[in-house]
Amino acid sequence: AQRVTQPEKLLSVFKGAPVELKCNYSYSGSPELFWYVQYSRQRLQLLLRHISRESIKGFTADLNKGETSFHLKKPFAQEEDSAMYYCALSGNSGYSTLTFGKGTMLLVSP
Amino acid sequence: DAGVTQSPTHLIKTRGQQVTLRCSPKSGHDTVSWYQQALGQGPQFIFQYYEEEERQRGNFPDRFSGHQFPNYSSELNVNALLLGDSALYLCASSPRGFYGYTFGSGTRLTVV
Image 1: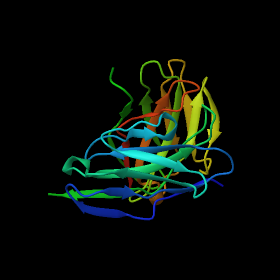
Image 2: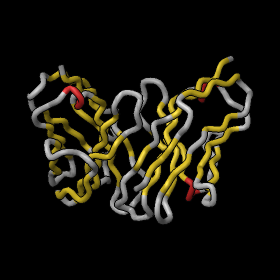
Image 3: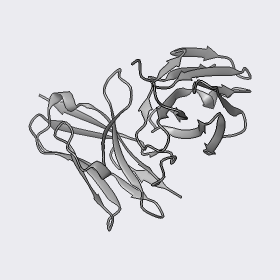
């Protein structure tokens, strides 16, 4: 069975501090990994996907197949980063569906 | 482009009633998926439609059914509502064979 685990419900940091949101997964095969973000009163939106290897809003995530992890990192948090973050995986078919973790709320204080 | 639009935005129903939620996909998208997001949880996959047929289904009872129309819009129907069906229902669309989903704002269903 495929599963995504986000161990932290809430992560609170100060502005300028580094951020790491943890995500571990279980999947038999080679999954696609994603991070979705939901800002207050906005819809869920794709932040980044591992296959594109890009940095969005200063966030990066590296897929570690040995540790089955896909942690989201940012070296210097900003107040506007405060949001709910969801890690998700899908199979490597274009018709695969998403399995989400329970999410981590990131609060960045001034 | 309005993106994915869902209606209604909020809904209150009584236990045992039936409900229909609607979704219009983003222009150019032909695949529609529905997710249920209970309070404090991540979205859970209900089912996926393309070519007007249910192609994949998550672990939801038969009380949950759907439909996709020729214009790719979709409906989610829930019969015999239970209190536990109270949740945010999200619709997501994508072009066929593409991984990226665009989500709607959701319909907040409250069952009393």
